[in-house]
Length: 142
Image 1 (cartoon, rainbow, N blue to C red):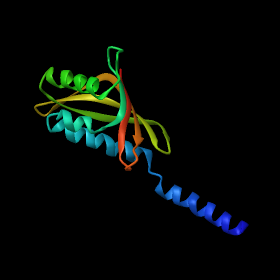
Image 2: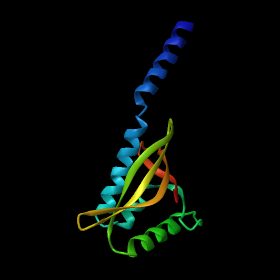
Image 3: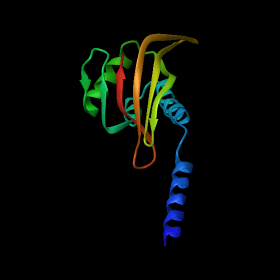
Image 4: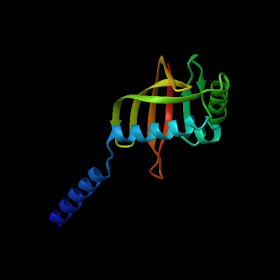
């Protein structure tokens, strides 16, 4: 019985390791989804699908967007400011464990073949959802 239990425990451990994803790859894939939406002109509904249901966003002015309506309003204001296309550049993965990947990003504006990056950093907490997808749980725009 002990051998069976040890075998099951070992199998579960190896299966868990096999299912584990490279945090850098997770961050790259999630950021690629964000950029796909942003390059298409920033469809608000598509952007909102990239957030977890209970996501929070700490805005550049220090205020908290604590629900989907407030996050949507933030994006509407941001994208309406200039009518340009934007993208996020993955800087670093600063923490990863099981279902959580924390990364830093840079915000860039795309304008007629030119790319302008801004000094601020966006911190993202990406969480694996029940369906296996990764979504932004918390963002801090600095």
